[in-house]
Image (tube, rainbow, N blue to C red; front, side, top):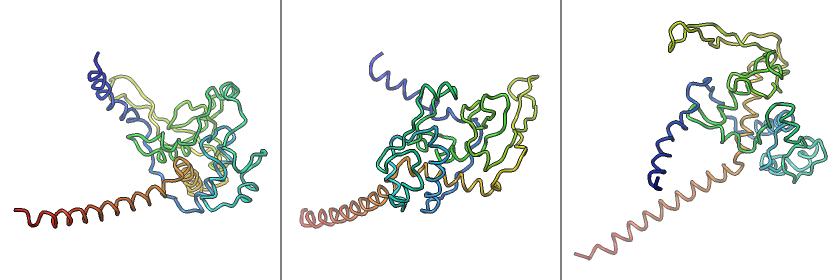
Length: 253
């Protein structure tokens, strides 16, 4: 197969990759929470609940100064194991131990908010829905399962805030295979209340997801500002070039 045929074969497979996530659990739209207070709260939640098992090896603690935190605030509130403010957000847990305990190595979360974007929704939508759809499942090793990632290896680290729920399933006829029954999700049933109301919990998750989206590209605000400046410059330059061209050719018959 020559090079051009290989390129055509790859292009033919692209639609399958793009729509690979279609038909899975529907994603809720993540709220837009880009104010400093929300991002600071999200950073606190990330360090307290995510950074125990997941690393963010492309992010340094001192980058949180971009969120209005001083080095003393970072040191006193977000560093617990002797790390330095200039260190990367790594963890001490070895991958071999993580695989033995959870059955899979927890992924690095540095750019997870961008990596999980798909045709079904943005990476923020994926994370927002994933973190809010855990339910109690005694058949799983951790005691928890998830609607977005069935048979997930991760336990529900925010269960105290959200409370304990089970998933209600109903049996329906399979529309594709007559005579076959399938189980369809019909909502959650509350077992015990959490420390937060459903609205407060959703707000906490929204803050956490907003921080993870920011962490995936901390310079995104600067990039957007520079992009606007560059486009403005190009517009002005194009106008000047157009007028200069008209002036140059006006006496040419």
